[in-house]
Length: 516
Image (cartoon, rainbow, N blue to C red; front, side):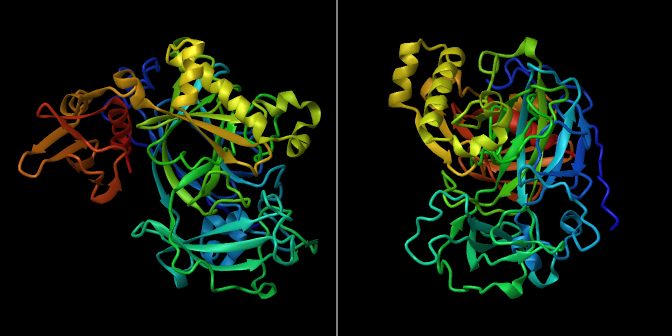
């Protein structure tokens, strides 16, 4: 058996608490985390992933509330172009290794996604809520020196796509893979189509022929396909890095298909689950057991043809445990995956709020034939109404009116068995109760940061724990440790004072606390 990479864990002590429960609506009732949080590194290799299962499993890492984890996530579509997405990358080669005599990850199913984890959280119990802040996301460079500096991804017009069998050109039923190319360092913010090809029958190392893309991780033989190199010429696809699948483990079964999303998160496929966003998940098993995978480089609402631009990413996340006894009104009784960012709350609804419970013993098979947008819309609307009543203190009539005149409902996806609708609520319509501005200097200095101000250039530098953030008043970009980043919001100058939101402070406090 090929020698596998071992998980590398780098430990660092921060100077102060990572989370101040006085910051932000989201943290208003959060428990204090330990005074010595750690930074961990979780590599993706055959020992640290599960393929297609987000149920209960042995954790590959255990963290405390407030810890930061750098986590590698590998796409299950790497085999669509072995040369560009597997070759020379030791971790990905380890996961995909399969020949006539050995298969490093033979247990693939019942779903398709390569999930890094699970990560156990000390003290997490049913009824708690797990908060996951996405501090950073970056493309994983390919390992082939021939394509140095580039990252590749695959989009598949698949048999589970919404319009499969309804095309007007022959063959009517076809699966088409489009390979996209991106700048690994983020020098450009777009992906370009490189080539496409129609799926042809592929023979796996065991000799089985696959007429369609029906088994996760098949490696396409380039000699069996015909490339179309004239694809999407002069078209620039915006790169929106996000995790398609993040999940805590559900309580209903130990082996759970990674494809249908549900109350525990999972394969939500919302491009808003990106850097700068925070996800909240209801904990239903001890330890929470967080898994992360299905990384994407670009996707539109609906994910219409079957997939996003499926690629491999590395992200930094902070994991915070909110105990049941101290949950605020927004998180108390949470029974769905909730997203927060600087400007929005996003509620996720599905055809079935808890399909594992609602559909019974054969739920993981039956869900593929039971979904509808009608059901998902009703679920999202009911959840949104309840969120507005409980979390925003609106009456039922007020909430119902607000939903019609101000809430944007959209189709998240129609390809993941349990179809999704999301509802976007703008914080600004609630004024300071949802987006309170605070003085930047006071807010950052009170947890130990050094704040420097240059009035001539209107630039602010914040230094903490060996990290630095330098930004200009009103600008959307900044420098973080010498690298250009997109701020989650510009710093505002009000009454001759630099001001930011409480969410801004909470987010960049965590980002500045990470230790390399």
